[in-house]
Image (cartoon, rainbow, N blue to C red):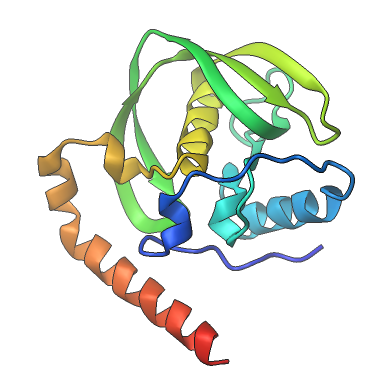
Length: 178
């Protein structure tokens, strides 16, 4: 298991809708790498495209924050089919480092998804777990937290976004050269 590099704002993979998982036979090494990366970065959720993998797959671990119920999850091909309520929370994102924004999201969702083995489920999630799931589903659909805030709030972090994007593009160029 190896922690991977997290791609940052400016990398085109973060803007595209990821491909569905169709082959579940060899996902475990990728899932292990995703958890390792998420823990290395001190995150609570990580989508596959954040480590430059074009798949509808994400992992969540909120055990350090929420000790009730099951808190470590793997979701493939997740689709939010219902949502209700609303809540605001200050969110960060591993792909937009050092930027935190107040994001409004539904506080309860109904999610259709598959587990690491391809088994299908439909479950209701609420509170922090629902928020993290929505954040990661956004990633897999090409959306970042900056797409969830007002134009004024996005402008307030424009300088940081410009720096992150410039660094991301430099990183991508240096990988092309090697």
